[in-house]
Length: 347
Image 1: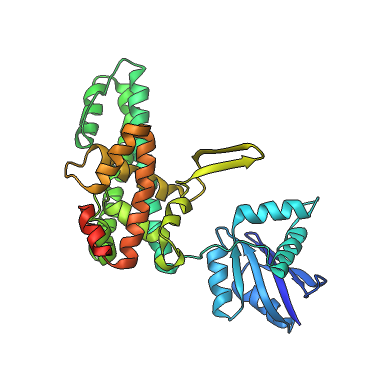
Image 2 (image 1 turned 45 degrees about the horizontal axis):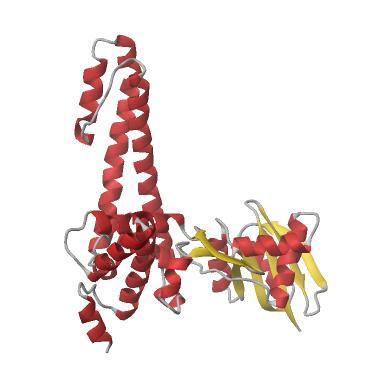
């Protein structure tokens, strides 16, 4: 008889529930949230497992990799899907009830699995998120200085990042109190700029040594950050059976509501990865407004802009960029600037 198990993971402890083929609870307990402890508990029961499920979260990648290496059939379940199922199953929420609900989901096969990224993808993702964090904090620091000094009639105005500190010191010269306040802020800003430059160089070095990223950068509007973000987010191109689904995976496809006589499409779902969606939108905006070299992709986007407006055209172009980049990844080809060439190659 095969059994199913559900893991409700928290930072310190993990609730485990094991059920048999008819849904009867065989064992339930709590162990520390460590792969070794969970594996030891599951193996000590002496049972054959068909599925072991846990919810996607900060610790899920670490636990899934550990359980998979031990030969256990572990599955990572999509968060929103699991929340909806558990809410329908139970009245009182607790770790014990959640583990029971997850185990029942595994038993009947009512789950939506998610892709667990590889270690290399996770490291690339950490590099990108850390770079973004420092960039945002640097912008917040500059905005804070601009806003607070404006209260005293000191206007920074338009200034390059390299001359920003000199401009601030020039404005507060002669204001002893203000000089004492802005000096620590400028010191922090200087450190942020230095460390951000180091992280950005790491991104460029990573892209320079990656053939796939260099190939993706042949697409107009796609730079090093967008290319590396796409590689780290998709991780394995083969997990998408069709390139058309990639845009929807990143939340760039419109929602649909249909009930009776009502049937309409709404705005984009924004359900996917926010960083990837933002990067694609920025790349589409650059392609549509700043790229000078003409291509079939820009021509298509300009036609959409004339019919539906610039904002919708950028979203549509971002979705199509995801499709084109995924197809280039699968086929191993570079971007073709003329559509006729693309059609002839397909024929």
